[in-house]
Length: 152
Image: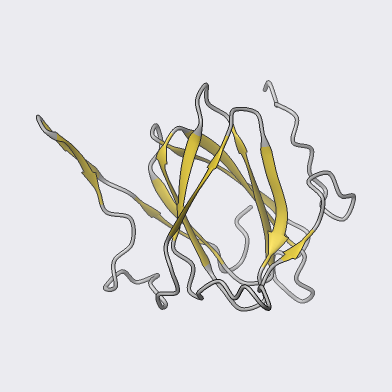
């Protein structure tokens, strides 16, 4: 089930003999809200970075190298999707921008054989003196999710 307020945008890769180009987010995209900053983070194969949410900012996440399992959990009281978990498998084999709204827990796991590079364009700049970031341990019981591999 989709979490209320989460938006996605398929990303188009345009290759030629020199390399490739992939637009991630434009100011004229319907899901664009505002610019805060752009940063890159990475995650190693099998590692988990979770859980956190923001009270103010939207995150706009895309992968430029590797593959990632992005997991969202809606703990917002009164939300139509409260209690729901949503998984995305995104990266080189599935280029997708995922917009995570405020108050939605999110985390990710590197699922490829190499380091994964994540680009985030949040709507707010990082405030070093008062970060808009609220964390739980990756295996906290408050989030009903098991990061173990699922062989379906």
